[in-house]
Length: 358
Image (cartoon, rainbow, N blue to C red):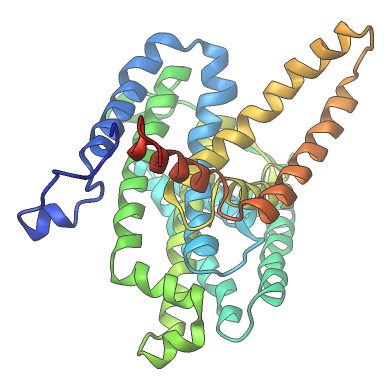
């Protein structure tokens, strides 16, 4: 009763094809976005911005890109960390080598170069899939790690191998405080999430899903596998590259290739698995889970040990974090392959029957 579509009639094609056809969804999203822009800055402190909110926003953007490739097109990728690194380093070189380069254009240029690299390493997807494709994309990770570590041009010939940016400005406004960084990343995430949501509902999005479900049948009905797969790699790499540029410029400020190691690729893949493959909302759920869980364990486990008179070391907490991640991934793959997004969908379905469940 509380959450029903009954009585919400559509009188035009435009209203029938809305992103959120149910009024409750539209209002909930608008309220959530308004709270993110207005309410969160009033409630959060500096620690929450730096440790939770800014990493969540950027990783959610990266998970969004990975989900387009893995969840919507069904192409397994273990090179997401490499595409983030390409976005960060190329945005850095664009920013420092071109006089007067606007920050937003520099960040988008990082996504552009990540697109080129992603399409290049996506070429094997035209012939192989599954585990073989995962190994092929893993080559991108190893190659980019080597290139950014050994080729001095990418780091502006810095002897330490690290790069740094400062005095970020957009339209004359400084982006230095945690609040300013949060709002900047939030604006990027809202725009890209809206574009991704519309894209997966379009003709190319339906082609991706057809390739994911059965590529042979998709080819039979006239879908071009080469175009669909490479476009998925291109869009995914662009979004991941922009996320990598934001991670380096806004969150880290100074970074080295280790910031985008293979661990980052696995982390993004875990976000998609836990959040829900083939779901825009699942990208947000997965990112929130991955960001919040380590902080929760760091606070909860020592407190739990103190209750029983046992001292739990930092190393034990770190190891427990890996074990919990592994157990949850196995659990989701077995019990709920569609992740937290599916649980959210089931909850919405229950609300349609509340308070009179059948």
